[in-house]
Image 1 (tube, one colour):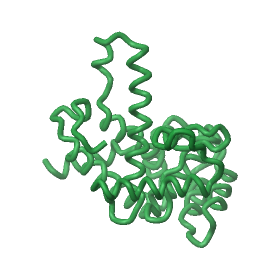
Image 2 (image 1 turned 30 degrees about the vertical axis):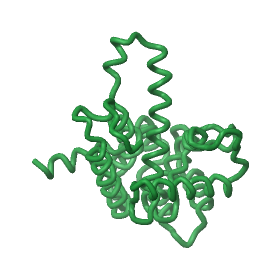
Image 3 (image 1 turned 90 degrees about the vertical axis):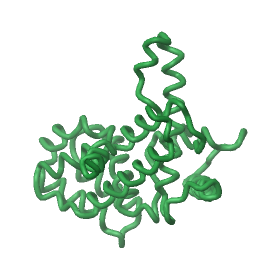
Length: 229
């Protein structure tokens, strides 16, 4: 992860790419904390910030409506409520789209609202019902997660290890998010390369580029780019 990977960026500057991803994550947190979902445009921006949920925007808007979605979103900001309670109330209020994706959207939003308290936990990070997800790519051989407590313990251990190797993000879970999404992307990249012609494989986006895309950071990277031009 910390070594320069020739496939990471055009320039091979992985450290610069990681710094940009961290900056984009901070912008995403800022947007989600500040938005009140007072317009369809703000609602659309929320969906554009969650890669796998973008396709559901129209359906959720039509079946839930802006006022109801706004109330559901504000539930995710209620820190006095338990994590699971917020997710359950959000998904009960939101109609349309894929319900598993809506649950993951709620989890992702909470992660960005409170990255110091909650790691990114979507079903492709760890799906407890199937025991699948990218966390399994970094566990020791023979180790199987059995419950939420063991998952959080593994995440915290990963965070400590990343900090030892210099990938710290100031007491929050940004670094573990990047690492686990990167592991997921590398796995998909490996399986894709097995399935396509080598020449076509050269057209596949680079690992950190795809990591940022899957993390829904594309809109925020554009903001950073414009700020530096």
